Image (cartoon, rainbow, N blue to C red; front, side, top):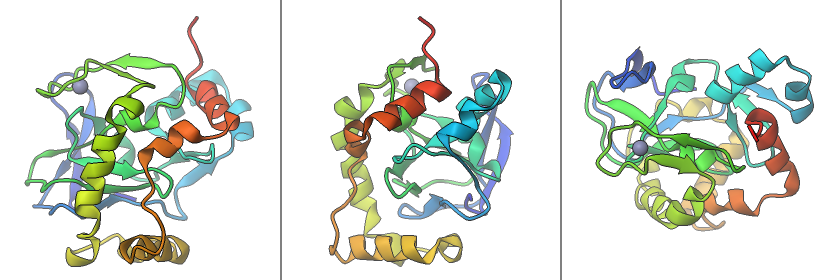
Length: 212
Ligand SMILES: [Zn+2]
């Protein structure tokens, strides 16, 4: 589920639709959170789907750290990638957080480098001055520390800013976020994706099959 101060518009650079802020959104705000109404699919369910539906999922779903595919029920699925994204996803708990203040009418972007669990790559046309030009599996190794640092620098702001999505989060996830805030459990590094078991890689291969 995505923050209510958002709308879908045509994006620049022929990148199709994108999600834009309708109001100022301060850093530390939760931009998307997993909810009961999102569609969660197992590897087996995806495997049984025709190629056209798997291609749809490859474009709009994300892969969780336990090898499930999640399709947001709302316009969260239209968030585009940027190599200098204003949000990042906390891998493992699947909340997407604003890592800097987002201005009205600014496009809300995330970094797809977090989701590449296999050896697929895509050419990036994000237009950022920090564009990496190719998004690939190695991005987590190259940029994981930087992403962790960016998330950690705003995570403590979660209780201090308005959080319209807080009431939609499951009680177990709320407790996990509160435990991280209280430093009772460790902060989940995005690099856990690289330490996942084989089934995560298989899950990625299923969604993004090799073209070799
Ligand atoms: Zn880029």
